[in-house]
Length: 79
Image 1 (cartoon, rainbow, N blue to C red):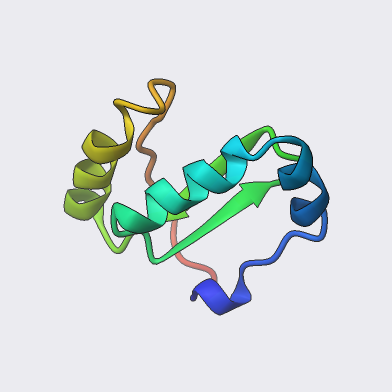
Image 2 (image 1 turned 45 degrees about the vertical axis):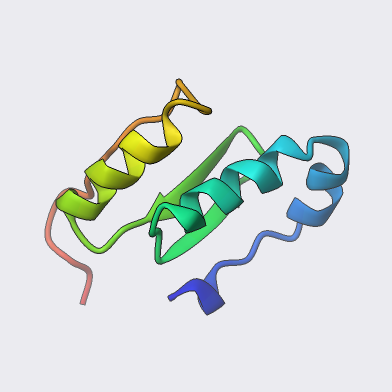
C-alpha cells in the first residue's frame, strides 16, 4: 500500500518543517502500513490494518505528538 502514497508538496514542506518527517517516521516505527503528509502539511496520517494495531500505534506516538488521534473509516468499501 505504501508505494501508492505520494504528495508532491512533501519534499518542499519537509525542508521547512522537519517535524513532519519525524512524525512520519514515528508512525512507521509504530507499525503503520503507510504514512503520508496530507495536502499542504496540516496533518500526517498512518494507515493501520485494524483497530488493535492502530490503538497500539497511537499509544506509542502520543507522548511525542499529544494531538494524535485514532480514526476509523466509515461506510461500505468502494468497489
